[in-house]
Picture 1: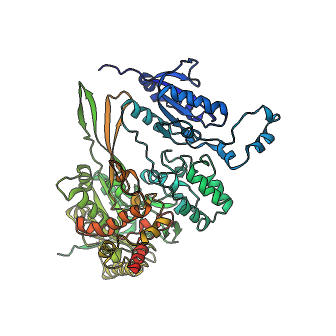
Picture 2: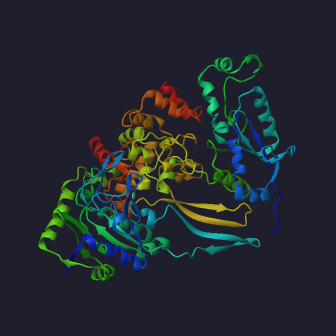
Picture 3: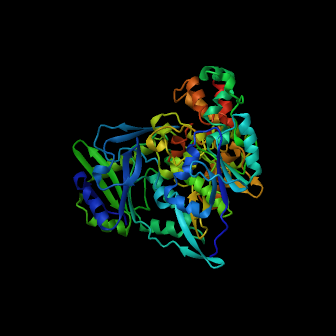
Amino acid sequence: MTARAKPRLGVFKFSSCDGCQLSLLDCELELLAVTDAVEIAYFLEATRKDMKGPFDVVLVEGSITTPHEAELIRQIRKSTKALITIGACATSGGIQALRNFKDVNGFLEIVYARPDYIETLDTSTPIAEHVQVDFELRGCPINKYQLLEVLNALLNGRKPNIPNFAECVECKQKGTVCVMVAKGMPCLGPVTQAGCGNLCPSVHRGCFGCFGPMETPNTDALAKRLLTELGQDKASVMRSFRNFNANAPAFREESLKHE
Amino acid sequence: MANSQAVIDRKDLDALFTLLTEEGYQVIGPRAEDGAILYAPVSGPDDLPRGMGDEEEGGHYRLSNRNDAQLFGHTKAVQGLKAHLYPARQKLWSAEKAGHGFRVVKDSSPQPRYAFIGVRACELAAMVIQDKVFEGGPYTDKGYAERRKNSFIAVVTCNHAGNACFCASQKTGPDVSEGFDLKLAEILDGSRHVFLAEAGSEKGRAVLERLPKQVAEEGDKNAAAAQIDAAAKGQKRAMIAGVADLLAANLESPHWEDVAKRCMSCGNCTMVCPTCFCSTVEDTTDLSGLKAERSRKWDSCFSIDYSYIHGGSVRNTGASRYRQWMTHKLSHWVKQFGHSGCVGCGRCIIWCPVGIDITAEAKAIGKGA
């Protein structure tokens, strides 16, 4: 069996917390297999090696919040064959997209002693609003098995097995009792994309929507249920949708209804 | 010949578990876990949900305390026995790279032998429906067939109806006349706590023969019959008559759009339905590309990928997806398999996060027709 040429992998970060790229280091047992399969050419969390492009595949974490980032992502796009965005920041704008609902200058004045030193954009936006993205991997943070699956699929020339259906399917396949129906807890599961590994419902917590809207999110129906049978007030419903994926269109539109 | 009946005392019920375990079965029965009744491994009567009942409504479920000693005083578990007989994920085969091609490695792991205790009429009816799906045609599902053949089924008849139950109108319960190995009716009258038992197969007769038992009295038989009667009469919901033809004649009803406003396409109804059998096949590889595996996974007609064909998905609206599910279940299923695909357990009503009620939607379509 002849070895495949090792694709060159770059991992880049924009406005984000680093958690998603650390998922790659969190692969533990699989990590050696990953380094066997790809050449890690740029990944500052893992190596001081600072190899220049071109790359075969680039993982991008974080959202675009500064003019510098908006320029840098264009250069990265030019230097890679495949560009995969990872995490809620890169795919929807992240928690920092809360600024999109307000005037960013107000935050600058409160947070920084010298706001005039800060050069920032009015909004936090996903990478796909700036350059063409080949695959978006959701999550806050991403699930390491899903990350491995995406790399694996790319290496083997197949479609990644990343479902876009609701988290409810993951609950039922795992045998997790519905916290909404059996405990009356608010849960975003029915409108959230599966993939987290059923983290919150399996420890008796409602889904927080970390993986963003599922493929056909009927947020209106869920919000109505939260406001009636589940006894939530408008402010709670607004906050439920205005979270890590506040800027994802379906969640954004629903949260605006409850302002 | 009518099957002979006997009475097993509550304190002798341990013997049934011991016997089944000795016979090599993994005993699966109802347990109260995570605020619900679940089918899970049980080692004896002490694991059963003693004194527990359940409240059910559209999108609502709570365990309740019955303040009695009944072991089967609940109505039904969150999920039927689908997850055991037809697991959510099942490896079909794997392959290894060999020269320019690959070598297929068949999955030959032995199938489990389950003894199911506490199976309800609707759950047994659902198994019979899935038997037809997986074993009825020229291509049988060997894994399912083996697990099903290996299984021992101890039915417990219902003594009351849950609020979402409508098995009487679907003619799948509450009584059970065939398809079981053992049928039990729990009778609790003051300090007397017994199970009226009846064998329904050779396997069941062999087990019943070895259990400590007494002769069944007329009073016990009457009590069991009265329970079934109460479970039938207590049903608050019913599927309207002639629903198969009604739905077939109303494929363009404006009501589908009305349901779509409420339906979230989350797939819960299909996951908890004990007869829903749709699956997808998933191929995975290892990073090196030297090994691959093919698995079968539960799928749902509410997902976009489910109806994806070249060029896109054919069911892009909530209305089209709900219509597909409901008309298949209640109408096309009849043409496909000769009977309805709904056993009237009401799980789709209970576990729908927004409480969409299949019986009410059928009525609404009837009114609009």
